[in-house]
Image (tube, rainbow, N blue to C red; front, side, top):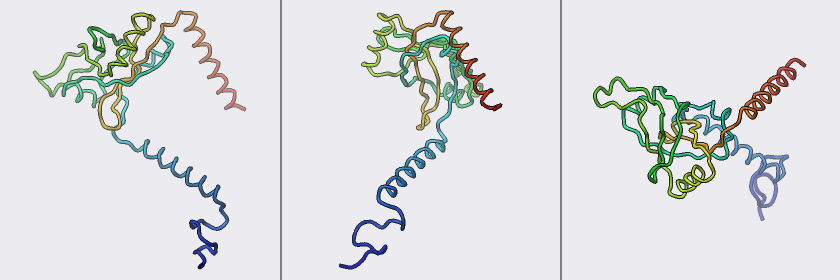
Length: 192
């Protein structure tokens, strides 16, 4: 039998000084880094609007990504980043999921073919998820709060909705106190 390139019999070629475990570990790390770099270089992903107040006012139990039905002028307006979902909410009505009071600025170049700023917009979700959301809002008293609107990696507009329960004033104060304490800890760690 002939010797392989690295002087051993058979087996894959590995750099000298690396055992099989270290060699596989190196490949896993490289694959992980390549995956992370690919995600960051995605030109289509872009956050359009974020509801930062939602996490302060509600306990978010779970979240769900849904599609949204839009016209051309609405998409063009969203590409310029002119929208607001802070005062909006989602509701299950007549077997469909709707975004209510979401603001998308008018697109001036659309002229007479434009859209209304605060019209109800249909959200796209599977029947199973729709029944789960209807049950959560109807029986359990939960609220459907939009968390973030964004363009996904395919360039489509998506909305992340949180199934949430409202916080009481004492809960809000506790959240604020915890946030302040975390900021103080970070300052103290920086100083030392």
